[in-house]
Length: 341
Image (cartoon, rainbow, N blue to C red; front, side, top):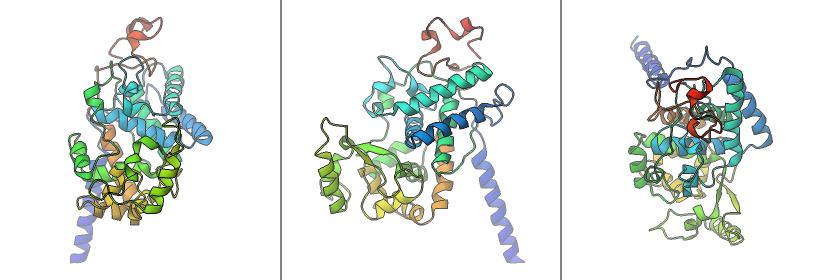
């Protein structure tokens, strides 16, 4: 009887946790576009699948865009804006891949053709990222809708808060903590490096086998990287996969890389050494389902940070341009839609 009672308590606790993790942020709901754009998810899913078939790299590219959008000032599609003061001109964003930026805009255009300008670029970015993650073998997570688009890019000071590949673990914990993301979020979201590519300038510090300055790296791996990057002329033209085992698949092999000292970034390799992150990184290496559960939870948490909802911001008519700059349209109202739409 006692064991049954204990089991019942565990089941109830699990249900409560699951319910809590699925609660949408204020102003968002899964059915937000159900009436205004019932075919939204089919349109987005079709275009994502088509693009993924041509270029599997679109999946990690979308996750990186979403992270670089959400982390500075919230998930408001500000990173998509072009112009002299855009976030895209900032150093951390100069390698965001055009194929993913173009996909977001193509989805926006298709959705607006079908439904009118009712779905924001911010909502589309989260939805496209989720669908691409699933295409690559990653976990599904429910997307709540209702985000609005920023009228202007994030400031340089906010963009500078993006974590760098050279960060050590204490700096990463502080950086994520400043955005209300905890250690579990840090370790799980770092696992996005289980696919995708990097350029030599972002990991050249790993060639220095100095344990005081850098987590230990497999010597053969370091030699291979050094030789490869010696050919990086002009700089930034050589690509290196972030995960040397299954570079195009979303799985837990990234954490195996860390165990055998083949983490590409200092920020990655440190996770297996630091006492605050070691156990969780090791657990994710052993149990992929545990990694997937936490990654999905952390993606929902990140995609709900500091949102514009209600009458804030706008629904952009072009993801790269605020409505007041869209050619031939002074404001969204000029197109027959109120600014609060």
